Amino acid sequence: MKIVCTDISSVSAGDIDTTVFEKYGEVVFYDVTPPELTSERIKDADAILVNKTVIGRAELEAAKNLKYIGLFATGYNNIDCAAARERGVTVCNAGQYSTAAVAQHTFALMLELFSKTGFYNSFVTDGGWKAAKIFTGFVGGTDELCGKTLGVVGYGSIGSAVAKIALAFGMKVIVYTRTPKNDASVRFVTKEELFRESDVISFHCPLTPETEKMLGEDALALCRDGVYIVNTSRGGVIDEAALAAAIKSGKVRGAGLDVLTHEPMRDDCPLFGLENVIITPHVAWTPLATRERLMEVVTSNIDAYLEGRPTNVVN
Image (cartoon, rainbow, N blue to C red; front, side, top):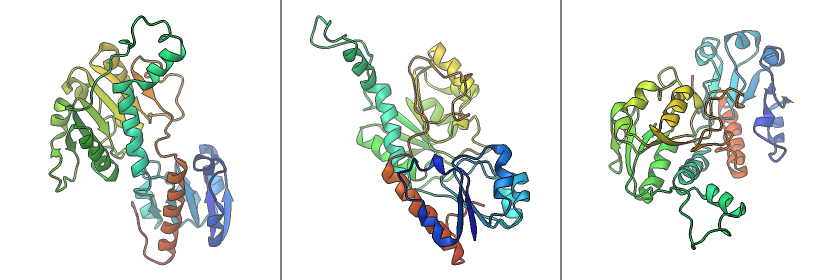
């Protein structure tokens, strides 16, 4: 079969073996595919492999031979799954490959907000410690995680991994999820309860019509003064203008974000440059070991589909 990889540069910087796909047939790689070229590039493909390329109804209609879409990602909001289902196209995501890495990055952001190691390193390298009159520096305003309440939105593999780490730090964990689980280590609450009771809110849910801009003006009004926000899921679950206003007013004490509504970041991003906002460029999932695991999941998904037992189907 003919496979088209539309945005392989978003998965590999030359450090991942992509020849593993050649066993399935002809493979065409594109570093990046602009939206206006997507239909043309996939028009004769039997299968496509994508990360963030948008595959909507128009693109699907142009791909007459298409039977399979494999995602280099857990999230699949860039695929019109309903239209794919109508056309008999199987869509499979890469679930759980990045659990450890994303949970780790979630706490990297949280710890930076609370312990401010980057801030203090800059203080030292800028000569602040050399000029200090005492042995320590009270310039960062640090805080303890222990005893704080972490609100976890979404309790799949990543959300539950984050909860376990939080418990190890001595935090209390409350969870909002559509499908409560039998887990006595955390307390399951309503969305409104989570916003009202959390000292830190961490998002680990997919971007859907129900979760889009979940954290907006109304939700922020429910939150405690001085709440921290962490997001390593999808940028669209947060109303960025509302969050920026809440940070400026002091309602939100700080935010750690690995994702934004528009990626790459636009010039008009309202969160750029704000004090106590840490933004990383959607890198939580990118450790080499994590991406090697991703390739294993994607190839396993193709194998399962060709054997007539598709796994990780999202449509």
